[in-house]
Length: 473
Image (tube, rainbow, N blue to C red; front, side, top):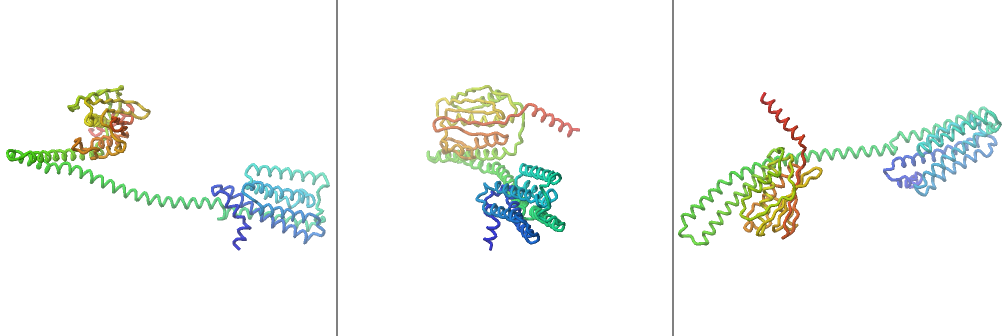
């Protein structure tokens, strides 16, 4: 039974229409309603004529022929590519029938005229505005044509009804009821829950509601994670501060006791013991440096960002002069250093780290370093290039992780925090940092700083001054 209903409903054609093509699905359902309803109307009208009108002639059989055309047109659709043609055949054959019926059923006064509005309505819904307008003009021309020939010629008559008023009235009421039925079936579909557009909207609404529920749940989880992360960050910052300060006391005590042991046992210690004491002192010093690095790393997020006008040329001269390395290094500035608006502390700190590393991790007799700055649309891009030992590509990410070093610390004494702190500073002010390098081919560290307009700085300074004056008052 279900299979029979499915075949009769032509659901495989409906399913072949893409789900997102709501309008096309709507048109097919209306075509199905019109085809089935129209066939039933034709059958009923033909049987009524045969039963009530003596010698009705060929008209009932013409109407039955239209019913056959409707059925064939509906059940023999091969693919969705022929749908528009099927719609036109259905509407065109309906018009042809009404046209021919009118000659012997009253001309302009035929009850079939009521079906004109039904077909026009279906034409708009199945063929769109263009097809609807075409059928509207066709029926207007048809109505004017029958008015003229009914008024001025003998081409039309009520011959089908033998000029019997009772039969004419019956025909009119039957046509009225059938036309109302066709309009009602269409309206019922458009307003019912079977309406494809409504179904699509309802489904979309349900999906949206489900997504909103999921989003609300996700937001709550995200807020919980955020709160937990903020709490963890505060605890980590507190831990870093405590660790840096409180752990230094026992380290100093260890260092001091080591000095006492070295003095007290100087005459009896052998070279191995002296070496071990020196190792202890170096490890204590390294631990102090690691604690300082941990504190500096945790301070990056807590330090407020400040903006000022920076003469990067003068700033770079200060950074270069502060280098206390014993190596005979050479630093070359290959571009004009700009005057910019930014955080001077960040720029100075990052340049100090990069210059110090470029000199320290360099096995050449004379380390050579090049510094440049270029301007892009939204950033100032600085580059620090050296001729040092270089960095394998697999370590390009590792070097920016705190306390991570490529070589053992006994080979190159380093906390492994300088680059991590520098990158964190740059990212906090909206910039980026990366390295381009290969082993034994030197390295180029590139970092960018977002451009700030002078007007923005002036406005910020005025606002701060106004705030101070307000507080003072």
